[in-house]
Length: 398
Ligand code: F0G
Image 1 (cartoon, rainbow, N blue to C red):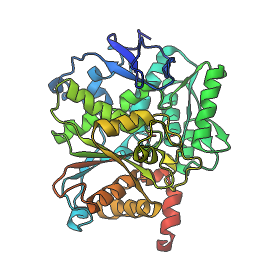
Image 2 (cartoon, rainbow, N blue to C red):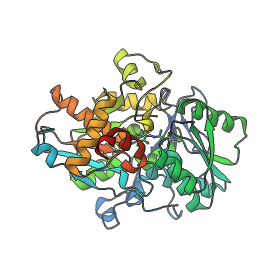
Image 3 (cartoon, rainbow, N blue to C red):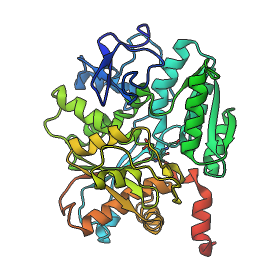
Image 4 (cartoon, rainbow, N blue to C red):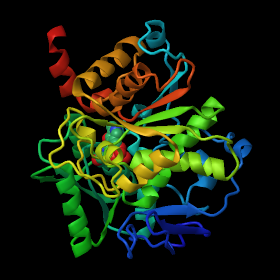
């Protein structure tokens, strides 16, 4: 692992704090079974030097864990548009003019997952494994399939039967992944992957779900790009939450910039889940020290139809540390926000991403987010990922 990972990096348990030497398949703390986090002890990152590179994940190479000299498996991911809304403010749908959409749908496979896969698949390739394996609500499988293809690796994806939007399955097929459908939800699919990995049945396949801490290192670059482009730290960052890796990664990105002295304030993180698929909202509201899972999560936002998020504790810490909060939105609010973004701003997102605007509207109505606040909505995936939802909900227009 040391040949791939930079020196000066350790893995630290987010629960008990025990630290470990990086090892490729060490994802959960052997002592308490909670996820591990990558700790970068120092960096020679320099904004001026970085700004001479194109805006993409690898612009921040000195803040990433991959050793200098390792050739990344890349599709030029990241560098996504940060778009300031205009008409939604003119129409008074939102009360602040300072709202920005980080449009992650503009990544090579149409979602933020590509930022993580460039790191994860780079590691897999240099480990010399036969392939990569993921469970997925769709986007992870599309991204893993594409990056595996790029690396010349095989890819196996475990998908909840009937629970994945068609655009995403089409991508996994197109890039040549082996699809294994699982009867049940995403949680069941992830359980099967974990069991097969632990039993050794997939010994030569590298698992790339978000309990893999290296993958999240790529996703933290969303925070770097936000600061890089805005030139300041926003007051709030709103992120849709499913398996809870992305909000944890983005928060880690801001914290690293702060701890290394590149910024002098931190944003409040807002995690948004769909009403009937909201284990983290429930856990947070109850003050419980353990996850309160949702047995049968239901929402039209299939990307975040998850009842037992593996990164629940990381996400909970992100919310608490950032003095943020979790919020829920309904399916109707999601569809409405999808239409608002598409028709007033020209930004087409999938349902999970539209939760962010729905949440912002709710927070403004409650008076939590104020008139002049700077807010970034992380629009995680492209509208074309889930064409059926659009056609079904807008068929009266056909
Ligand atoms: N938005 C989209 C479009 C997603 O695909 C996902 C997760 C999320 C938000 C939530 O991110 O899981 O890090 O909290 N999709 C995963 C998948 C679960 O398999 O594609 P998270």
